[in-house]
Image 1 (cartoon, rainbow, N blue to C red):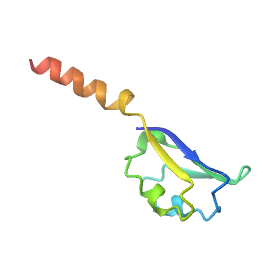
Image 2: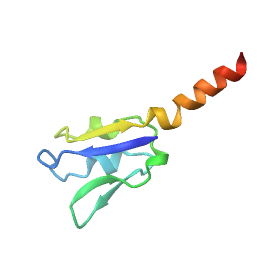
Image 3: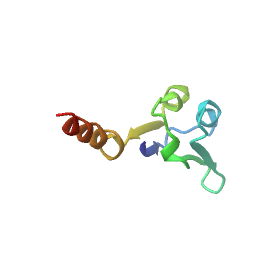
Image 4: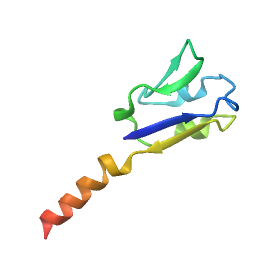
Length: 81
């Protein structure tokens, strides 16, 4: 799950490459602010293709490992004992 999609606006060149490569359509474009943002964070696969595709390196994907994955893994391990 996506915790945050950080966009460094001092680097962003508004090319929308991040939108083009996101195969889950997590990223949308804010027409008013002219920036990409994570509209559907629950659908994010944490593939970081948007980070890699950004020619200006303006995007940082910050996963929310604790909220979605880690607690499930820990509870599953406790039940297995």
